[in-house]
Image 1: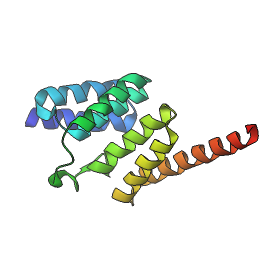
Image 2 (image 1 turned 135 degrees about the vertical axis):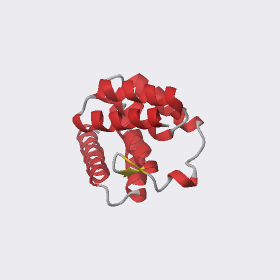
Image 3 (image 1 turned 30 degrees about the horizontal axis):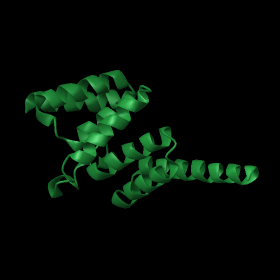
Image 4 (image 1 turned 120 degrees about the vertical axis):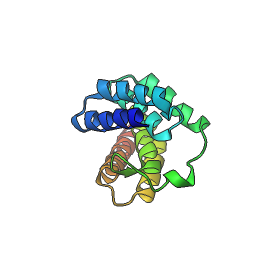
Length: 145
């Protein structure tokens, strides 16, 4: 357990400074140390892949989350990077959907994250950005049709 905690702490520190290669490395190490079915670690690995511009990897990693169990009741109120765990997974999903141009899905995921963790600033900013991009895209289409 101490080894797992060490990797999680390193992951948190690396994420704070945007060292996404270290985040990826620490996520992998945490999975080897026993967190291989953690939704949060899996989402963190997807976020790191996204930030490293490995979009296909990020999307593939997130698709595994859908195959894992639904959120256990015990983890719903757990904070991960300052967000409720379920909200963090949805936050990452929204970012990946945006990167792939799946704007409606991104709005839905960010909206759900906002409902789960309504006081989180990062989620509120993402939701606002997703809505702005979607609105701008819609206005752009209006000019061409």
